[in-house]
Amino acid sequence: MRILVTGSAGFVGAALTERLLARGDEVLGIDNHNDYYDPSLKEARLARFAEHPRYTHLRADLADADAINRAFRDFTPQRVANLAAQAGVRYSLKNPQAYVQSNLVGFVNVLEACRHGKVEHLVYASSSSVYGANRKMPFAVEDAVDHPVSLYAASKKANELMAHTYSHLYDLPTTGLRFFTVYGPWGRPDMSPILFAERIVRGEPIDVFNYGNHSRDFTYIDDIVEGVIRTLDHVAKPDPTYDPLQPNPGTSNAPYRVYNIGNDQPVQLMRFIELMEQNLGRTVEKRLLPMQPGDVPDTWADVSALRRDVGYAPNTSIEEGVKRFVAWYREYRRIA
Image 1 (cartoon, helix red, strand yellow):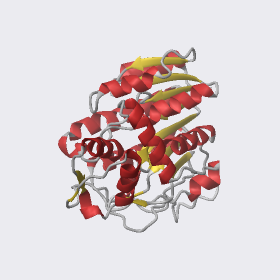
Image 2 (spheres, rainbow, N blue to C red; image 1 turned 90 degrees about the vertical axis):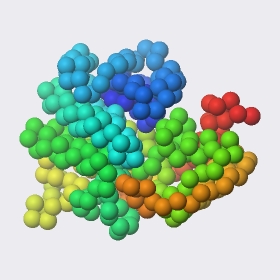
Image 3 (cartoon, one colour; image 1 turned 180 degrees about the vertical axis):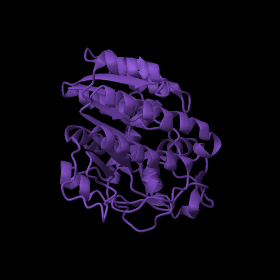
Image 4 (spheres, helix red, strand yellow; image 1 turned 120 degrees about the vertical axis):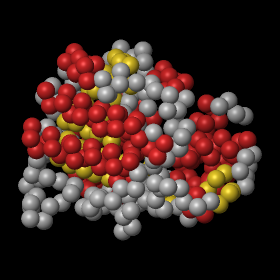
């Protein structure tokens, strides 16, 4: 197929692009290579497939409607994976405008291009952060998500609402995937695995928020990519059982779906740090601090809907995933 991937130099986008090329798809990748984190990591990810004969790369910003429309018109994608976004909960407290431009303006540009380009299926990245102040565990797509605790979360909830509008008005099949704490090789340096690894290697204390009482549904990158591909291949259709008198937030009488994509096995943050220490062969001091603004104490994905509909089956244990991540980190940082 001809698949357009936004954020193709990003963590999930690069891993997805590699898998799509390996199975024979033709891919146009779009990324703006911004400096939210070290652009050299994005360049290194991109270098793994940039010369592939079925890959074309475009440096452009989703907020540039003319560039996006031109890319869709020239490439004529059958399916789209929109993984580009301004990420990060804490950064949204410092620079809210970046989230409006990328996650709202950029997303409506993608929706409009998909609509006019008659795209068969748009799969887009939502986030577990939409559950916000919810405390019922595990988080399920049937739950209401009306109490976000960061602008990032609000922007992702807005994406789901915008996608439903286009599915309803224009019969555009859309599927949102609520990612739960993705980790693994080539991960983002603003996320805890690389932050922890850097500090452990340097022997510096680790800041552990919520006094170490966090748990996260850590999900290994390979499992995430497998789920994204299965979802791309499973075009959203109207739910024949949808009841507007008792609406299910995860489905619709339009071709619209929202799924959790996680490991369904929350891990205590202190256990994750312990595994990092074991694999790096050293221990560090932990500074126990209060919870950060915009953060949530726990996440846990109910992935039963994704299992049922596309056969999603994450199978990478936290022990194996951390081992693979640390092996990559040692090689990338040239640590003996």
